[in-house]
Length: 442
Image 1 (cartoon, rainbow, N blue to C red):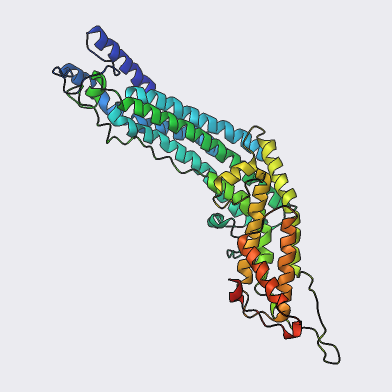
Image 2: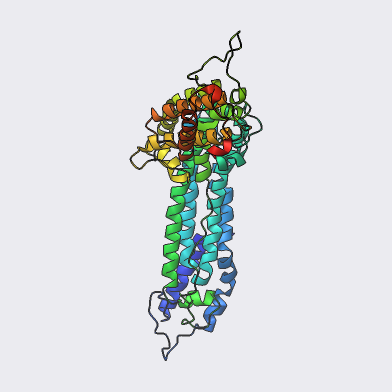
């Protein structure tokens, strides 16, 4: 159970002892490669440090265990209460600060007493605590998914709104006016804030470790470090060209947290999109009068599903603004929610001139348009002439709603609109209009 502080005290005492005895312990003193005089490590120093060597080798793991049972345990104990995102963020952020304070303090002590050859392993033992802290966020996302009625694996396709989901009755697929959906979004915002904090802490501590290790490898071994390392001569330093100074940063959950926010914002669109392929409007025939004469139809109103999609698009911006307000209320000084999400969503394709808020809105709107195209391509071919008119009406309606927000259309959606308009323009009369093969749209 020896700690880094006590080992450091022994180490400092030995440095003083060697200095009093006239032995060189300056780790920064330069030694010429191939010098005629090579300083040997006194045998007495080997004997003196041998009992300490085993402690130094397992020091990183022992201290990591203490962090696990201390500040990490306190972080895991923080629970989210329904509708209390602000309190959760406050308490969890405080414990997260304590975790990384312990990690930094431990590393500061370790990298003084542990020789270069052991330093990387010792640092990695401690940095396991970063991965454990990330696990707290992963567990929170799993709990969110369970309560909101989706699977964590669904988050990987957060912007693919046509991916099959067995049950669309959960809170995740309701509008934000639904109380359970509101709580789910609130929880996702809290997890995004915690993930951002974890990401910032991790970047700082890993940068510091890399700097310290690089500094250790750039100097010759001192007598004490050489003895702890089992070396007989101080000149036996590590080969800098082959020393691996890279530290594998544990994967954190910032991406999953961003995906959860986007998944919830787009969840309400999945039900109307899922109904599109089975709709009867695509194969309907033109109405006929009581005399059996085909009634001309010069335009179609948007279908019920298209109207449902359009209405949800209209309220998407207020819902997004509400989520952003939740985020700002929990942590006024944090990175804005839309900036956090866009930074971690590789699918982001917003216009360069868009504000981050509109870019995030465009991300969801384009996801809706892409899913609409894919669902249309699942309609049994061919479409009737009336079905072609209906498809043009639905596509134009959804395009006009998206355009009202200044969002550029998804390329596939724009091509679909152009194809159906061109097809309908070529038919002078609906009764003579050819049926549309969906392969023309693919």
